[in-house]
Length: 130
Image (cartoon, rainbow, N blue to C red):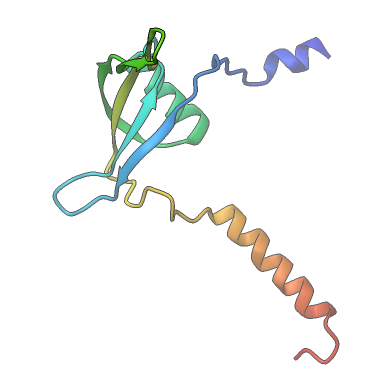
């Protein structure tokens, strides 16, 4: 049992939330790009590995920039309280030329195949269907 488990591919990725802020599809002159908001401790290499290994995206280049969280003051009649939003890092990912369409309207071929099979099964079970 242990030998079988040792032969399997293992991938360790710490808990790294990535939130997509925007995405641009590829054009004739520019490759597809996406902007993510990531934790400040994530490196360019970790971002590239995360997208490549988990989502199988062809990442070409990663640019990052650090941002400090905004500082705010809440003024009341008795006191003034100060607070700060969390710091974050913005990662601008440039994809390889093989990726043309990115974003929210992207279709997943595996899911389309399942939907087509379900429709075919439903049509076969419907009486009077051609």
